[in-house]
Image 1: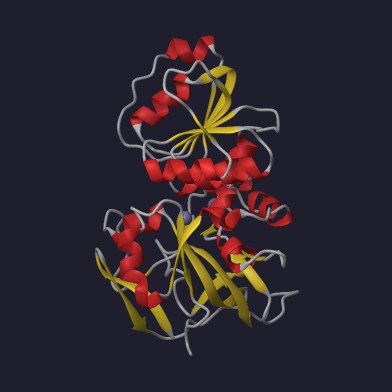
Image 2: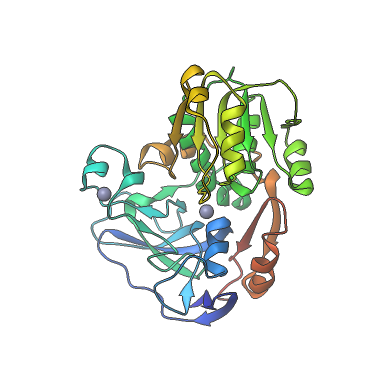
Length: 325
Ligand SMILES: [Zn+2]
Ligand SMILES: [Zn+2]
């Protein structure tokens, strides 16, 4: 089969490799589409180390069932599925407490096991969700990153009447803005990059103007910068909840008095918890997600796709439907 592999940091190539074998509780999936996000880019650029080269990348995938393990029940060949690419162990203390995002043995697809940018991939049965039939392939590719937003909304009890602010309009931030605006929730954003701002405005968000006296009930920090975190605190209304999603490394300048006097709740929102967040995404997936898709590529265009993804506002994805022909 064909697969897209990182052959060295900064270089991807289409390679020929064996179709993987699958176990009794697994499914063989023929891949149809795979989205790329910031964590793929950090793998591509070599900031995030992979176990070996050539390494098959990609974790935001949609495909159809092409093989069914002997102990798997209730599946049919050809069923379209969205993959939940974080496999938890179900056994460790966080898993037993229902917080699988904290699983001590979590396996991340495309980071620790080969990724989904290939003709076929093997997925454990509980992590292949039957795809809603009313969404296009492009929309289905958005469901994994959408679930990050769904989990952040759940963890902050975000309701329709909350004034929301999204900090950072990269692919996670835009997905959240899109989700909030589709749900009819008033959403503002902070983003220095002009083209990303335009895209955020085009999907219904208001640009927060520096110096305005507005404050917010729910804040989603996706930029992973110190200034983003400082902005989250400074723009919070009394009693606000802040979901921190971006993974920053710089210390932020924050005063505890602001947190205490405003009675803020700050929640670290790590991916999503199995099965509840994917389950709610799948059962309530909105149309219109593809508004933030800006680039569609085939595997032969992958080098260009990865090189241009940091510059293109919105999300890029690969169509794999013409592979193997
Ligand atoms: Zn992703
Ligand atoms: Zn676990």
